[in-house]
Structure formats: structure tokens, C-alpha cells
Length: 409
Ligand code: V47
Image 1 (cartoon, rainbow, N blue to C red):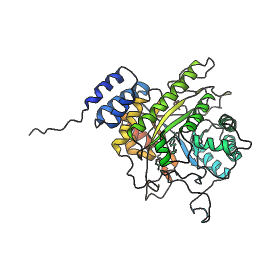
Image 2 (tube, rainbow, N blue to C red):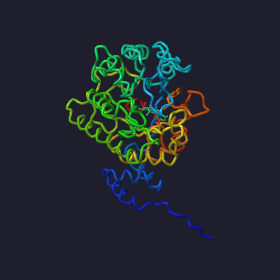
Image 3 (cartoon, rainbow, N blue to C red):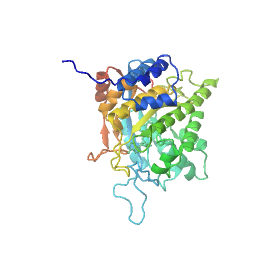
Image 4 (cartoon, protein in one colour):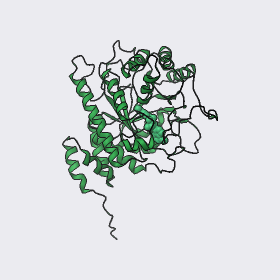
């Protein structure tokens, strides 16, 4: 008996297919159509086409370690389950912590000795730690682990440092001081969703999009590469997500224009590694840092409601994850890499996402404290290199261990 299977094919994607095949830029309406479609196979196919043009069979991972220096934070963002408020009448929560520089260096050195090439360090906005703590932290890691890439501090932390430094420093002064102390790049966190309504409802006391872009623009002008994130699947709309990505694309156009116009600039190969003029991991760092940089990677972060003030929300589904990642690959034609951060998506979904535009699997991670699924009760979230390579290989791609500029190691 013949069974009539309802087709999921979406005629609205035909015009988008033509643009993608011709290498033309997509617009707001295209982004919305992609995010709303039920035709998951077509957007996967289109995103995979772009991903293959950029990266061929390669799928990247990094041997890294995430380290949080404190979970004490003066903010109370509603999507966040990580923060513990500074002591008031009731005292600090029993699971609030603040790590000493020595403790963090021990963690970083242990990772370095076991082959890590990158540490990813972020924390809450601590009310009393002075700016010297962050400089000493970078110096101490740099001195103990000379070639370990230090990717640290979201734009929100950088703005916090401008306020706590004495005398007060500008964003550029803070970034220069951190770079002299050993900082190599900035992660993409803190962007959330660039929209005033969502900002006011979900993270009112956090600095907004203007500051986030100021920090990333300044970092790029100083030759410090950065990533960009988008926290999705909470109270934002599809339009908010598309606008968020288009704002990043506009910023990246300007960053790449500066980079490509610079006669002295480090990298003519801006499509793969903006700002990468440093020695490959394992060698001594190059004498002079890059003079311009740009976003290296876009990281859509799937909202995990557990333990947050938004715990009544369901969070994004697997289909929404794939649609969002594929839409990102198709809209963000000027950001070379797209990451599925497996801690938030789950390793299984991140594996599938490799065929929906993703080329970067992040890495071994080991400890992750910012999000935990209920009932797990642990911040030990680790994939071994063998597990990552198996997931990538099984999906039909070639696993490539990368350094922090996406060069194969
Ligand atoms: O800024 C907080 C997000 C970010 C939750 O640059 C949450 O390579 C989901 O930025 N559910 C920090 N997300 C993490 C981050 C990151 C992670 C991995 C790689 C990179 C990179 C950057 O985590 C925060 C916020 O947007 N976040 N709470 C939550 N409940």
C-alpha cells in the first residue's frame, strides 16, 4: 500500500537556495524564513554547503580547560544559575567560591602538562577583587605555562575592570594591560540578545549591547581576536535572534575592512584566522602581536533553564538548535567559524550539528560551572580527545586538533 508522507519541503526556501548557491548575502527576511521553516533538511543542506566551502571535511576541536575564578557576582541575571550573591545579612551561600591565583595556576598547569593548549577563564563580577588580581592571574599563568593560550574575561568583565581599576582605566587601557600580562584573546560571552526589551526583562543590570560592542571593537583594533555568542531559547523572539546576528555581521564587516586596509597587518588570510600572526602553539609567542583582529567564531548558546529564575521556561528543542545553528552559518557569511558548544547542546546534538553548518566542537572542557543540568550535581563535564574524534569521524568529517587561531596542530 502506498503511504502519502506529508512533505516538509518549504517553497519559501527556493529563493534562499539560489542566493546561497550564488554566494550572495542573505537579508533579515531570509534569516526569519530560515528560523521559522520546518524544512530542516533543506536548511541543513544549505548550511552544509557553506560549511564545506569554508572548511571542507575539517571539523575542529581544541584541547582546553574551562576555569571559573569565582561564582560571586553583583548581577542577578534571570537566565543565570551560576551566580551567588555577595554576602548580605544571611552571609554567603555555602557553595559560593573565590579561587586564589595559586589555585587557578595549579589547575592551568595541570591542564598544560596534560596537553591543553588553551584555558578559557571567566567568572562573576566580584565586588571586591581588585584589578591587580586579574593582571597577576594572567602573569602567573603566563610565567608557569609559557605557550598556553589565555582566552579570558567576557566583555562584561572587561567593563567591570574599567570601573574597579584605580585610577580608572579606559577599555583600551584595560585590554592593553591584560595583554601585557599574558591575555591572548576574549571569549564571546555576555552578548546574550542585543535587544532592549529582552535586556530589561532578563539582565537589566548588566551592561548592554553598546558596551559589549565597544569592548570587542577595541579588542579588534588592538589585534586581540574575540568570539561572539548569542544566548537563545528563553524570552527572545525569532526577529530578535536575526537582528542579533545581523548586528554581529555589520560589526565584522567593519573589523575586516580595517584589517584588510592595514598595510602592516598581520594576516592577509582573514577568512580563516583574522589577526593570526602568532607562532603555532608549542613555539614561543611571536615578538609582536597582530595589529588588527576580528571575530573568529560565533557561538550560539542554547539556554538551559535549570536552576535559573527562568526555570519555568522549557528551553530550546533539538530542532530549534539545528535551525538556529544552520541560520547562523548562512547569515554570518563573514565569521569564519561556527561552534556547537556541546556542554549546552549535548555531545549528541553537537555531533548532528556538524551537518548543519558547524565546524567547531569546542574541546575537552573538563570543568564547567556556568550551566549544569538538574540532577547532575557536578561541574565535571569532560569529553576525552578520543570521544570527540569518534563523534566527528562518525558524522563523516575529519577531526582536526586546532590551536586558538584555528591552525591544525
Ligand atoms: O555569557 C549563562 C551563557 C555565557 C546560561 O567564546 C547560559 O568560545 C545557557 O560565553 N544557559 C558564558 N547559557 C559562556 C560563553 C562561552 C561558552 C563556550 C565557548 C565560548 C567561546 C563562550 O553563558 C554567558 C551566558 O550567555 N549562559 N547562563 C544558561 N542558563
